[in-house]
Length: 221
Image (cartoon, rainbow, N blue to C red):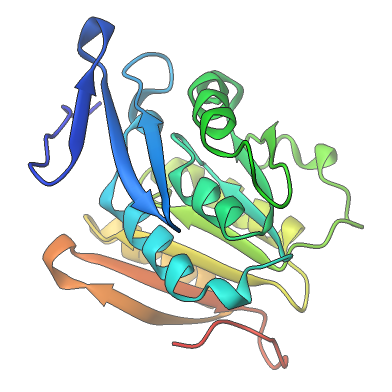
C-alpha cells in the first residue's frame, strides 16, 4: 500500500489513526471524502485519476443526467458521487472489504440527488450473477483500476458482462508499467479504444471504449 500524499491545494481534516478527510468542489457542492488505510488498502485512497474523471464528467454534465452509470472498483467513490450529483442513476461497486469506506462517502455526499445511488458488492469475474444481463448501463466508469495484472482477465470478463451495444466505457488511468499498457491492448481486441483526454502533469489518460462498428451516443472529445 502506498503512503498517503498531502496536496497543498486540498483541504484536509485529520481524524483518528492519521486518516485524512478531503474536501473537493464539484457541481456546486463540497464533496467530503474520507480515505481509509484499513482493509480497503489502496482502493480507499483518492488517486488523481478519480478527480480527473470526475472533472471530465462535470464538463460533460448534459450527457449524464438520467443515464444509468456503474462505477467499478470505486474505493472512496469520488467519481461515482460526482456522477450522482450530476443527475445520473448510479450503481457504485467494489469488493466487500472496501464497501464500508465506499458506503460512508456515498451516503454522506448524495442526500439530495436526483436518483439515490446504489452501493453494491462486485468482485470482478465472481459476482456477475448479481448483475442480470437484462440490466443496461449507458456508462461504465473506472478510475485507476488497471494496475494488478492478475485481475485483468476478470476485469475484461466483467466489462464484457456489463457492456452492450450502446454502452460507453470510460477508464481514467495512469500508465505506470508495461503491464498497464498490455491491459489496454487486450481491451482493443474487443473494443474500439481511444484516448479522449490527457492530463500530462498527472500522467493520466481517459480512455473511451465502445463495441466496434456501432453507432453510440457518447460524450464529445
